[in-house]
Length: 216
Image (tube, rainbow, N blue to C red; front, side, top):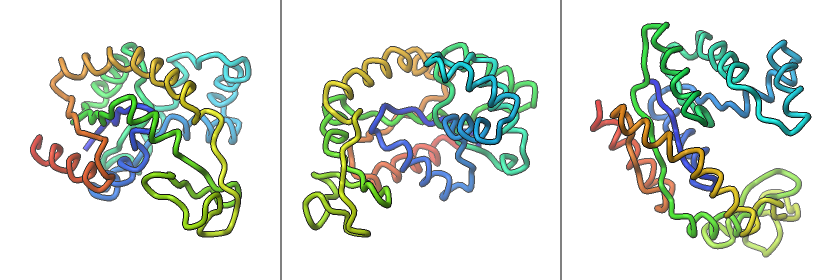
């Protein structure tokens, strides 16, 4: 099974990617992780990507596609994979389709996790992270037992700089601008499966499993 997971910041993509990977035995492939791995290992692609990232510029599609192509060629992707954070543009989507066609394969499904913008603003602005162990809490959905203190290690809970309301709304504006064309593209390709991401994580997982099962 070859999947793409789409969703805005705070939509729960990471949680659902892990759930789908465990349920169906497919590997989660994150472009963010690919960037970090290639840069850390100082690969030729990592060095090229880092030149752009240091300048605050977008990494050109060809470099991104080469990283993805290399990763999907590895044996652990033979049973399937779930792409998170890729494609981000129509050009990348079309290039991915051509890349897979050369392998004699194609995408099976594109899962869109839909959450209203204001629900995301509320969700992310309530997020706190332990400064020691990295455990994430939500002051409304999963608060710590003691205000401002991590249940696991006693570390101080902090709020990320980009988890304030106005910054979240700006991130959402960028997300909509870049993702709406992708949604339309994959809907036309008859690959798009939408689920309500505003529910509890377990319910969202069940909905995803349901649409994947129904689409087989």
